[in-house]
Image (cartoon, rainbow, N blue to C red; front, side, top):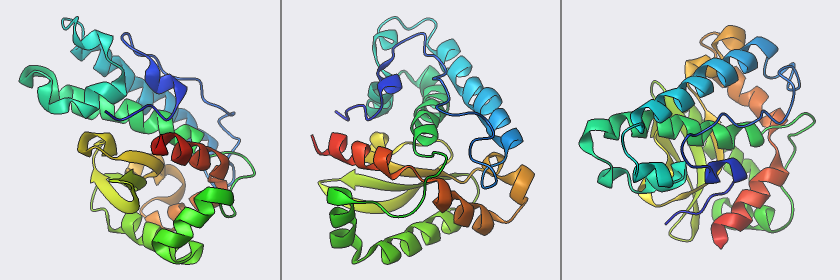
Length: 215
């Protein structure tokens, strides 16, 4: 079963909105304050509330972390499966996403992660180009991911709030390309949002996720 790459994903019911690791305006000018506040409090907060509502009458499922719930999504009762998939996925994806960004981020990874990316994608430049293309190519709402799957680093995207853990993969780096993540500042210019996002990537956290996924 997929292991938790971040402490807040180890919580069980009632699930809680994790603390944002920086101020709403910390990622300016790349991610604007208003988008961060709405995205965190309204969107992520809504996923948490709706996940808890879905699990109210399922004591056995209340013992599972959100990662475990999604890894076992096909065993979740059909009556609440879509709600758990959507809202549980939204909770897990965003819990990872906030930590993948920081003030003064950007640049390139170092150490073992840099070596692994170079081995898998030939160079960091090639990796960044392929990841960007994946994010741009996701039609509608969804996510772009760098993930560890079957022991290999791969780039792929998921629709809506689907999580890589649903397919047995470990998310290492993820980018939210729902319009609510960028529309206030960038309108329909997803390409500009993605280009700006590279300036706030927290490579230390990505490296930590990589090491955790390898265990």
